[in-house]
Each structure stands twice: as structure tokens, then as C-alpha cells.
Length: 282
Ligand code: FAD
Image (cartoon, rainbow, N blue to C red; front, side, top):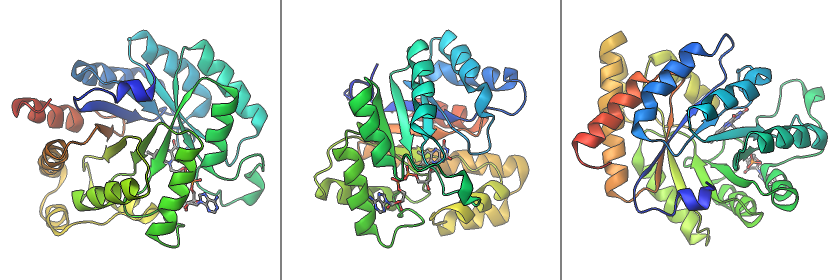
């Protein structure tokens, strides 16, 4: 099912992000099995970003064999058109219908950049012109780290949507106010495609620090206090409660979809979704 059809429902759509593990995928497949009971519309699979790319196609097949749709990510800044076409051939063979079209981070070693694509909107244009694939794109409620300001960020987002993107998947955020403000700015720019909220349950202080070092992500006082007060299992439980509250508020404010950054672990996301079910919100 393509993205626009997936998000045409009035119910909140659940999806997960995982990354290709460096070792054998058995553990990840077990975690996916646990999360499958919440009927995700699809699982998105990161590209590069520390994962083992070359194992991705076999992993995609194993996930598809569990009757779960896959949305592969694809970053274009270090790819040639030829690489992209090879990937698209594999996606088509696997019956994949949606791709998360990304530029990717500029590599430290600039010689790795291929110059066929410079920005994500060019990848979206390519997908729309040459394939039947539906394209999701990334959005940044607090602004992309390279953006001069929030207004410019939305102008470039609009370029991706005008090129044919069907949904926007946000970077994680810990304060819903940023998401709501972002959606307002997106709508003011006459962008009408669904904006899907990226939710990352807090698992450890290191994980949070790593995220904020790489992107513009604010830490609200409540989360800061929790990170100071709790450790290990207590922090995990705090993270579940924190994300549950975030999701409850998002659903009550009619979010179209929740996309969970699972970090390949089911425990927190599973508990958050169980909590939402108890509230009859899913
Ligand atoms: P773009 O939309 O191309 O934007 C990049 C920057 O260029 C922005 O600052 C934008 O404002 C600016 N810009 C855009 N168009 C123009 C233009 N025409 N002229 C001048 N400036 C312009 N990374 C990975 O490596 N692998 C992944 O799997 C991955 N998955 C992700 C999933 C999600 C949901 C998100 C939010 C991010 C993900 N990333 C991933 C990170 C992403 O690759 C980086 O944030 C990257 O730096 C930007 O990618 P983009 O597609 O948003 O780029």
C-alpha cells in the first residue's frame, strides 16, 4: 500500500524504524515479531547511518516474509544514479512501494560525495519521473542543523513536496509544542501532505546525548530532571511514561501517524503502545 493510501484512514497509523544490525538479524527479527502485534503499517529501514547496508535486502525480504511492509530509507549524497537504479530494481523485486528519500549527512571525507544528487528533492524528482514508488521525506520541527532559519527550512521542505513527496516524517522531538508549531508552519506554506511524528523512547542518557549532538533537539525540563534522577531500568520506565504522555497528547490533537525510532528494541515501544491501547486511543 502506498503512503497516501496508508494515511487516508481516520485512525492513528503506527510504524517503526529499525536499522540493519551489523551481526545476524535473528535478535532484530524477534523484536519485530513482538512489535508486529500492534499492526504497524510498515517498518522503515535506515540506510548507512551506522548499519550494515549490504545485508539490507535479505533483511527486507525476511521482514516482508512476516507480512510486514517495508519502507527503505535511501540517502543520495554519496550515491550515483546507477547505485540508485540498482537499489530500485531490488526494491521492485521485493514488491516495495514506498521509500524515505533523503539527502543524507555531508560526509567528513568529501571525496565520498558523488555529484548526481545534491539535495533530497532531486531524489524525489527522480523517483517520481522514473518509478512508481511513493516517497516520504524528512522534516525537522526544530529546524535542520544546516538551515539558516526555520522559514528557509520550510521553503526547502516545500520543494521536496512540490517534487512529489507524499508524507513528511519528522525528526524526533521531546516537546510536542515544536511539532504543533511545525505543522502550523507547514500548513501555512500550503503543504498538505501528512506530517508524521517521530517518537524516540528514552533508553539511556548516552542515547539522548548522542541525538542532541547530531541535531537540533531541545530537552524539556521534565526530561532533564528524569535523566538526572533515574538510571538503567528506572530510566527505561521513565522514558516509557514520558513518551506515552507525548503520544497521548499527539493523538488527542489528531496526529496522522506515530513513527517510532525503536533502536531495534521492542520493550519501550511495545509498552507505550500497550499504554495507548489501555486508553482506547489505538
Ligand atoms: P534535504 O531535504 O536535502 O536538506 C538538507 C539541507 O539542505 C537542509 O538544511 C535544507 O534546508 C537544505 N536545502 C534543501 N534544499 C536546498 C536547496 N535547494 N538549496 C539550498 N539548501 C537546500 N540519515 C542517514 O544517513 N540514513 C538514514 O536512514 C536516515 N534516516 C532519517 C530518517 C528521518 C525521519 C530523518 C528526519 C532523518 C534521517 N536521516 C538519515 C538524517 C538525514 O539524512 C540528515 O538529516 C541529512 O543531513 C538531511 O537529509 P534531508 O533528506 O533532510 O536533506
